[in-house]
Length: 266
Ligand SMILES: Cc1ncc(COP(=O)(O)O)c(C=O)c1O
Image (cartoon, rainbow, N blue to C red):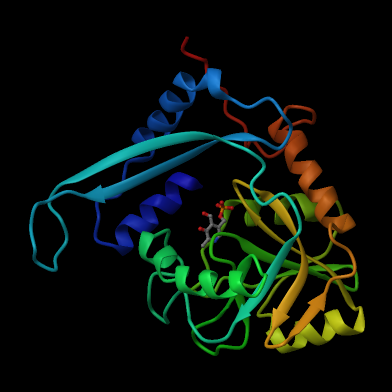
């Protein structure tokens, strides 16, 4: 799925998609050579970042005719493993209607940085981005997808062209359904969610991504008000995080075929 997402993102930017076999070879070779750097604590990982860049020396606004594909890696501590304080970003947008929000593109992160600077001054950790089409429904965080638990059902924003389709999002939906939870993908209006947090109908919200797996959300700030989530970390987030970690760390059966073995190079 990561290879397919990179190919999709490349096509969106008129870059030649990296063939899946080359992508997988790159990931395997870098992992094999970094075997000695693998952290041993549960929840820590070797973070891999494949990327593609145009290298044609040219000033025109046109697709490059030369590209380089890299895979870099770093041992990573549990990323954002504590509770997160989110801030509803009502001013800026990370993605545009018809833009590149659903592709993994450097520019998407660049446009999120100003917001992060502003919210840090207010004591928050991450922006909660709204859809550029209506500035009302929740899209995602700058580098993670969003989930909320309302009256026992798990909700996540439906993919809409401006949300990046997270592979952890996909995995958690599979796992949650397998564990018997009802999962609903639909537009989530921010004002509705804030009311549900205030009334206690929504007791739990979390964000997910490859590096963090799941980060519980303790408060969502909007204007001068902070909406505190009663459960952070909540039971659903804890259960899903453990279920995914159990597969990744070999404690439970890989019923979905997500694991690939790599022989270390020493
Ligand atoms: C904008 C954005 N949303 C969501 C995610 C989560 O995606 P994944 O679960 O594939 O790591 C990422 C991670 O790179 C991201 O950059």
